[in-house]
Image (cartoon, rainbow, N blue to C red; front, side):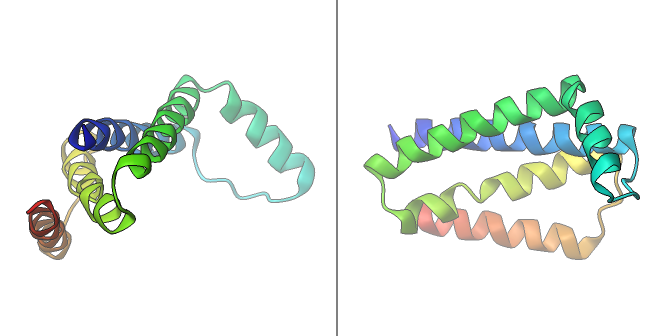
Length: 120
């Protein structure tokens, strides 16, 4: 059962963070941090379907994480869900068309090794 929770967490977190990045790239950089300008930026972002979907995905991830913690120890849950870093790196490269250098690939590979060690 705990691997089902992990699958939900990984899928929801990965989808949520990729959608956030995509939406913010389309929106552009926020440069004005005055209260009125921030309010307008929040209002625009709240109507962005990718931001709304991202928040929903992250909510699913959060509640699934709570479910995982009811049946697994924290020392297992945190490293096991770290596989999101690997999936996000892959999606950043192929979906968001980011340049991912060899150092980041090496880091993602180390995360996979850590997840494999925890799963034993």
